[in-house]
Image 1 (cartoon, rainbow, N blue to C red):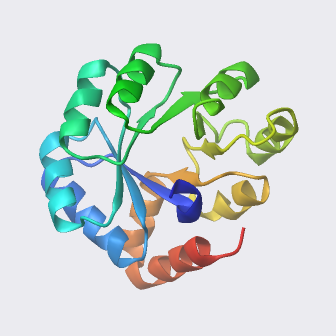
Image 2: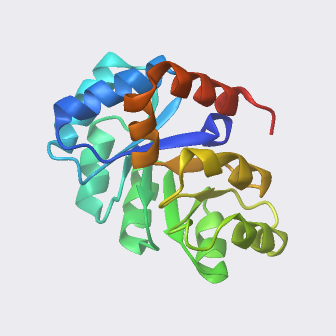
Length: 196
């Protein structure tokens, strides 16, 4: 699902209510997958509300740090989890409960280890740019890498061209939606619907 999404909104909201409003706007713009971060106050309440309102949405919880987060997220019926770094305890709990985990890494070794289990999160991605991913992929054949961290909406096509499985975009996407909802929705529709 994340590869088909191409753009993965990463929401760090200031409340459960604002998270639900942001998700409504993103779903309305045609986004099929969204990651809500654990740093959102009332994140469990937000996840429950989003799941109820949008049962078809591919919904994830990010910045998962321990097995308790995994269990709570599983109980709230998330579709995937995201860790920003290698997290063996999170991996073990996610595997036990059957919840897909996008595990983070930065070095070739970290990304290779994460990619052995599924999509790997390149974090932080913006400081190294798409050229880093382009150089990595030949030595990580078949790896599905999801760059995130400081990436603006305008940079998404360059990351996709470099071979990204999907691209995580956070505050820049939300600012664009506030400033120009219709225009941003159109841009997202082009990115999500474009050919890989």
